[in-house]
Every structure is written in structure tokens, then in C-alpha cells.
Length: 420
Image (cartoon, rainbow, N blue to C red; front, side):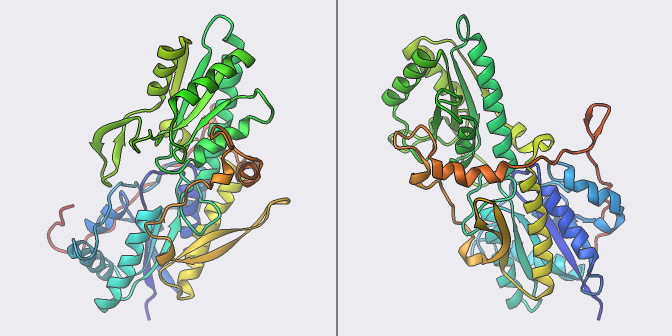
């Protein structure tokens, strides 16, 4: 019997290591020729499946696929496109099955966060009822580190390493100029509801007085009076203050400080930048000169400073996803299981998608200091192993040498077009 092909897609915001996962999926699938035929990738994520815009990864050389391991972003294109529930838009899911059937696809690997886990689960469920069973395996990825069950999420460790490095370096800069220039520096990092990336900034402060002196978490309601007092205390004691703030910081009314009133493709509030809000508050109330920065895409694209642990875990979940699938495991997700903290040891586990989809893991209160402006020893012990080790990409002419794939299209088999 002819082996079934596999479909792989990248979802949502990309990371410095999501391509390491893609590399693992493709390399591992190629080792099981009798089980898996070709690996097709969706151009621009799940949209590629809906529009039958598939990429034939078999056209890429071993060297090109291997180079994905050290290349950032989404090699096949990603998208922010959430499929609605089965009841709301059954046609989209039926279209996916139709495309999979036309291209003899029997394996579905969806690389993303909570929303993609939900899609993966629904595809598995619907395929059974349509008489074309698909083995669907979700592959974890999110810089926000907010997926449940798994100890951490591939993509997070590298962002954590980048922001901790950045706030430390910026702290040195501000401290050196504070006597006559900037006294307050504000760095905005990602994290709508979960403050894991903000917490990672706290790793830079190893002793009293180190930057950042203030962390602002989405889990802690912003208190203007206490915040200003903390900043003033830091400036008077150390000469300056560095602040790391999550984009999802909320006020006492539960509203984002930076909410613009717009909505993104997932229906989430579009945030307009909390760093300038915080910086202007400092200027107005305390009179300090300030600078602010938004890490934005830089934090999730920084493959040049990726965590070795993160790269290894990103590859491991991709490899495990394929191995789970060929063993018949369906509606599951590979997880990272922490075996010990010192020395740090981890292994791959397995979670049911019912336990992952549409659930969010926020920072535990005991990971945040009592005053709400720092991290605890427990949090530091959790975070430190995730940023350990360096895995530098190759360099050419002084710059990282990344790969760009050919991304050869698979000929379409279905008539007409499907609008998304």
C-alpha cells in the first residue's frame, strides 16, 4: 500500500527556532519512507491547506533542510488565521479534508500555540466522521511560554536569552550616562496575558542594584503610585532605573494600558505600545529624562543569540511528533518534561490535545516577588536552564548565513478556488 503523505504548517508568530522543528519533522519523516511518502508544507500556514497552495519539501536538498536548524522565522510562511468552530464554519474543515484526500495526506503536523492545538484537534475529530481519518499531531511553539502541560515551550528560551541580554546591556548603557542624561529606561516585551518574557528580563539582575530594577507583569494589576515610588527609590539609590514591561499590562479596571481599540485576526485587542505610556508617566510625575524601546520582532527573530537548550528542544518535539504519528498516536502533542533542575535534565512526554487546546498558562504568584516588581528564587531556578548554552549560526562576511528554500509548489488537483 502506498505510504500516506504528511502535511506540515507553521502557525501564528514565528520564533528563532521554529525552523529547527520544521527541520526535525522533515528529516525524521525522510527516515520512514515506508510509512510517510512526501512532506508537504502549507505556504503561509493553514491558509496553504485551504487554498491548496502546498510546498513540496522533497525538492529541497538535505543540506538546505539541515540549514533550517539555524535559520529564524517561518521558512514556509506562517499566518494569523484562526479557524472557527465546527458549528460556525464546517466548510473550512471539510475543505482541509478535501485537500488532504486529493493529495493522499494522512498525517497533519501543526506547529503553533493554543489556537493551532484546537484546530489540530478539530481536524482529527472531523476526519473520522468524514471517513478519511487523519493522524493529527500538534507541535508546540510559542515565545509566550503559555501552553499548559509542557514544562516550557520551544521558542521561549531564545526570547528569554535575548531580552535578558538586552536589558543587561541597556542597563550598563543607562548607568554610565545617568549623571547627566537618561535616568530611566523602559523595555517593552511580548506577553499579552502571561509574563514569562518579562520574568526572563529579571534574570539579568543577579545582585541588588542590577538592571532591571522594576518588572511589570500582566498578572499583577498596575498600581501607578507604587510603581512611581519604586522608580524614584531606584534612581535615588542607584542613580538610574531600568524597567521591563509586558505589552499586556493592565490597570485596575482590567484594561490594557496600551489598548488601541483595534482587533487583530484572532479577535484579540490590538495593543499600541505600553513602553511610551510608562515612560511618559515617569516624565510627567517624576521629571526624569527617559528612553524607551520595544523589543517587538527583534526578540523572536534573534537566532544569533538563541539558547542551545531551546534549539535542542525545538528539534526534539518535531522529531517526536513524527515518531508519535507513525506509531498511531492521534490528537496528541509532544511535551517537554523537566526531570531535574540541578543538573537540568529533560525528556519528551505526550499530552492529549483536549488538555492543551485553548488553555493558557500564566505566571504562578510564587514566581513573582511579594511587591510584584521582581522574580523569586523559584522563578529564577525555573528560567535559568532554559537560556543555557550557545548555538551560533554559521557566519558569512560578518553576518549570519541563513537559508532560503526554493519552496516549489505542488500541482493543484482540485477545481476552482477556495476563498479565505
